[in-house]
Image (tube, rainbow, N blue to C red; front, top):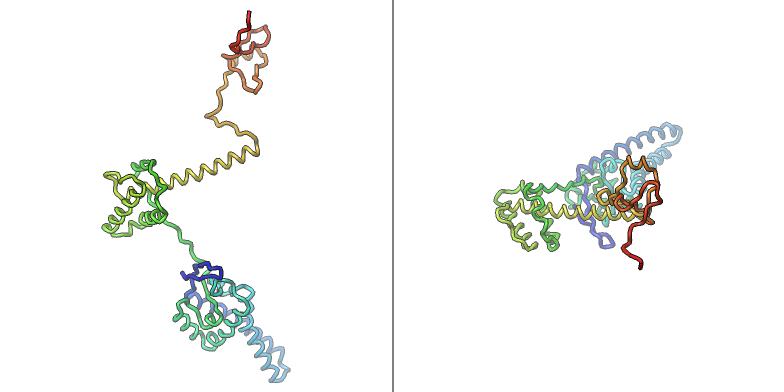
Length: 324
């Protein structure tokens, strides 16, 4: 990686292109350009057969300046540093500050490229790229440009090994708010690379990290627990807390949105109020309307008393007795 500082004081981490990939891109561009130049030269030779020698020479010079020199400059200007070869190899020409190139950058690179690429068969460009720390040729130095890699493989972060089953949930009461991020990062790096370390070095490192983590949490290291297993269990506890916090906030947001759109949410099955109804045979014998509270809550069979042939059920007693 190479650090470039933009005009806004932002550090960019760019990966300069190596000589093999740049050479392959140049070869692809030269093959395409020279194939087009040869085809145009054949067409001009047939079309200018009746012209004199001076006119033929002028057309030959113009075609050379237009195709092998002018076409690469125009392509890099219009594509912002991506020629056909660079596009195939995943490369791009950028400025020293990481921005896209303009016509003047492509013009300087193309003009100097005639000498260091075409006339010297790429020898000057290869030597300059090997000597430069960023792999730049002479045209890049004069134009203030840099060839970087666009398609960089994404580095997958290795997974943290799980703790032993008998340690899962054992540290659920630890206070992890005082543990700094750099200590978490050090613990994670150790857990993902501990199999690559020497056993003695790995054991001493795990003891040091476990003691630092125990000092931050305020709880000493449990007796009989290996330091590496302790670190894995605490990291697993932190991940579990983060997951519960994240899923809890998502569920709360979903509930609030559902309430705003569809009205009051329906109680989940475990919190619904139980409703007591009459047996099915009693309902078939006495198909009378059910008594309903003003708020839409159905009375239970123990609260509503009714007899067949009489009026509606008496309201429940309120406990107030009128004076005699």
